[in-house]
Length: 252
Length: 300
Image (cartoon, rainbow over all chains, first blue to last red; front, top):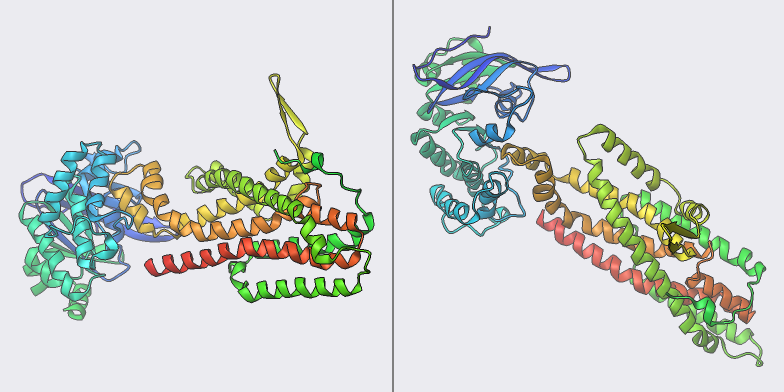
């Protein structure tokens, strides 16, 4: 059953209402609704194929939805005449496979969108790109190509690249799933820093310890619906739904 | 422009030689290039430098054999070939010129066609795909004949008269299959870029045009270079097709030399001689292509 979750009193920045989405005959998302308040960190977990990544892609308009509504800060994402530029300035996304542009250096990766999309002044953008590299603890690696960086470093450049657009919401799609265990932490620390600065974050993740520590609210999805949700303490310690229990027992 | 016809008196062709000797050779050429185009494996890979030795050997042996058969009243075979070499080299230069121009025209138009093939507008995408597939799956020789007979010998544009000599028609005829193949190379390279690159650039608010020109195509150039060079080598070998439609390139001239000399024992040495040149020109391209393929394969 779709349900609207009442969060704190603050206005929600992301609003999903009865979202349905399908690829061909397969319905991937079946009536999902939830709100995310500004500055909140939510984590979405669930078995693979449960529509988590698809859901994130719907939120920044990479995938069209069949019905329902997704609002980001009063902007209807799937309206016919959506200002895509405005939406994507607002919502940054980081991918499992980093997806850095391999023909550009780390610094150029960060600078490209502000220069070509936002048409900002190159010198200012460069200065901010240097700051962002420092922020993700990669000062000195500016002129390295993605192929010369480790997975964790690439992922942090990808985060910096998204931040260069000054988004208000960040989507993280299993950003540590492709990483070596020893580099996972450096990426998680970067995300934690962001969350502590008040960035609204939506994470799809398998890092349970991290989710438990950082999340304000947990969602468990299975087969296109939200099976269970709640604050992390209650979610992990006293799950109610049998599917949640089974999933957590397998993964923890 | 290069016009050997005006400078030399060459006796008329012996029709016997033309039919009996030249046609089978050219037919093989057509089959070879068609087969090469359709296979994914670059054909030039199979070429080894032993082939060059083999060719030179055939050339030497045939020259020697012809020597022993020839009477004393004729100049030696090697001497005869040496006499005709400047003419043949000019013809070969003409082959190279045709290959350059066809490649240039085919590449420019083919690259545009390739980009249209990834258009989001179905009519544009489909029509460019149909065009590409049509020319890619047509025999080169048939396309050449079409251009020869369908194109006018000159075009009048508002009083300006642009002549269309045969060799220009040959260039256009050969550039059509090149265009289609370049179009497919571009499409293939674009499709080989991981979809994450499109997603990432879209999520950063790049427009479709910016995605193609700033993100996708710059990553394609390296991937396109080896198949493009391979195509050039195939095109160069296919330029001899122009002899069938009367362009005075190296094969035509070789036929004329044979007719002028009138000695059948000259036949194998002359064509071996021409083969050696094509090999010497195309083989380094093939080696270079393989080196580039290896280099880029390691990096990606």
